[in-house]
Every structure is written in C-alpha cells, then in structure tokens.
Image 1 (cartoon, rainbow, N blue to C red):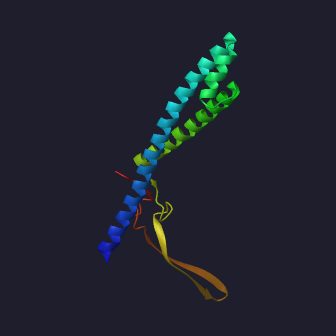
Image 2 (tube, one colour):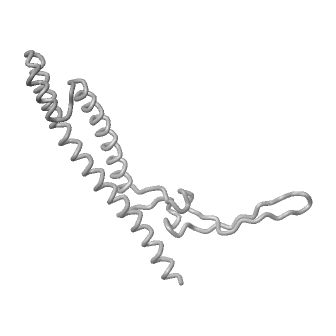
Image 3 (cartoon, rainbow, N blue to C red):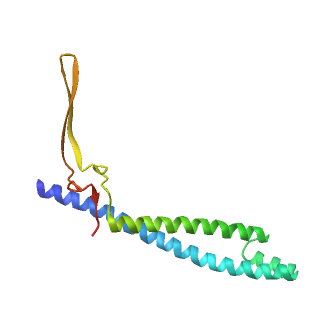
Length: 149
C-alpha cells in the first residue's frame, strides 16, 4: 500500500515536471517563430520605408501586397504586435526556467507543508472548537516546494 502511494506521488511529480518541460519547448518554438517573423517583417519595413522616402509608391504597394498588407502602417502595427508578443513569450520562458531551477509551490498543500486529513467540530458548554488533524504533505514531503532536479 505504501509503495503504491509513493509510486503515485512520484508519477504526479513527473507529470508536473513533464508539463513544464513541454511548455518550455512550446514557448521556445513560439519564440523562435516570432523572432524569424520579426526579422523578416523588419527587413520588409526598412525596404518599404526606403521606397516611400524615394516616392516609389508603385513598388511600395507591390512589396506590401506580397505580404498581404495594403498600407505601411498595417505593417508597422504588425511589428508592434509581434514585439509585444515576443516580450510576453520571453517573460513566460524566464518564469518556466526559474520554476524548473528553483522549484514550484507544491500544488497539493499549496506551500503549507501539511495537508488536512480530518476536520471536525466539538461543541461543549456553548462553544464550538475546531479539531483539525494534519499530516506532512506526501507530495513535497513538507518542503513546501517541488524541485525538479
């Protein structure tokens, strides 16, 4: 019985760790895609800006049209949007890496180190007294954090 409980807790920790690793991989792929897209659209923006400065509106329109834009400001808005998304993705990547390095708050005991196994109330002489039995959290072993070393 005890061995089964330990195996279940270990598999739960592994499941959480695998979830973090999958999220890390997904966010890294998203970051890489955004970086490529930013470089591509930034080069297009510079090209189009040059065409606009030269007054070559026919080639400007063609260059924008190849990428599905009608106006230079649409391209500019897309770049701003991608920059914002890139910042969010990088922030989330930093959070995931930090969590994998230093650990996360235990999801079973919510960082308390103990879990409630029984809660009841005793009534005597007009007073209600809560009786709470706790035990060390089996998932984090009372450490309050899960570490993925």
